[in-house]
Amino acid sequence: MEFSRRNFLSYSGALAIAGGTVMNTGCWNPFSPDVLAQITKYVAVGLQAFSAVVGIATSAGVINPVEGDVIFGVINLVKAGFADLQTAVSNYNAAPADQKQTLLGKVATAVAVLEGSIQEFWNDLHIPNPTLSAVIEGLLGVILSTLAGWGSLLPSVVGYQKKALPKAIVVTPKKRSPKEFKKDFNAIIVQGAYGQYLVN
Image (cartoon, rainbow, N blue to C red; front, side, top):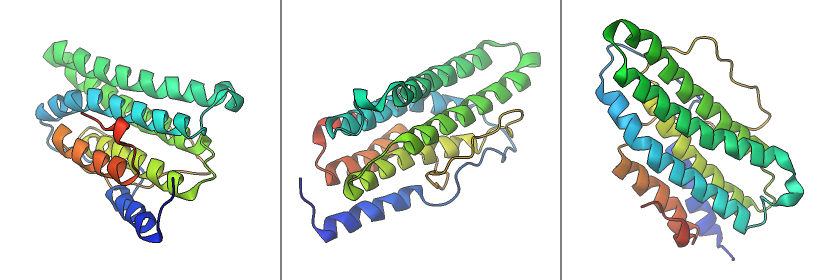
């Protein structure tokens, strides 16, 4: 698949969706339960989006058995991270009032851990094609910036240290509804001519 310079610049422009700071989970005052409702809605669409990224990378030969167990292990970590986030939200919702503050901290930690796993996935990818690299970075940037957006409304994370990685995606937190997420994510998918991976 060939791309003009104009298309490549379009991909680069799409990365503006994810420009800014890697993680921001420290801003929390006051907390609204609607945040957790939004996170719950995001989990399913976020997992579908990540699976689409894996599909694109696999179809391009970037992810293959030669890569060994490392990249597949990280993929499983990301998928488990989405499940853990959903569980943390469910536990908070079901808990009595005197336990909610502690469990809310666990939700914040689950968000941070998931962000860290996605960054690790990006760090472990080796993509020789710069256009494909820009597409995948842009897609992961939408996922990460949305996580960071909702995470910014949760308590500060305590006891979790993000790995220092040689390669990381810098994002600006952006609170997206599922509809807004699909619009931003699918715009990059369409630009890359990967229509079979649209998030619905």
